Image (tube, rainbow, N blue to C red):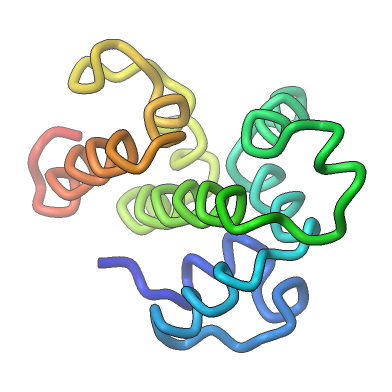
Length: 142
């Protein structure tokens, strides 16, 4: 399991979240209150190539909502956290942000030829991606 602090760091860490995240309970509390819009910005900069980051941002939060609100609602916050969790797990395996980003954006046979980024947009899909990554953590093909 990936540490809550690592997931928070993918979303900008203390500087953006304005809270030190040490436990999953801390992370859950911040997500339940609604993440600051800047957390989404930090996440998409980290997860997607620059030319794809805007498209990804508006897949997580519709553009009109993003422009209108300083904080994400709970559903959008949960989606952002889910993607941060999967990306943090990919980084833990490859120990390299660029390699994790490459994994997230490449079609994967165990995900029906879809990219982990696309699949991770839903909770069940994120669990599928985490299963692929878990096999990678244990030395099995990812």
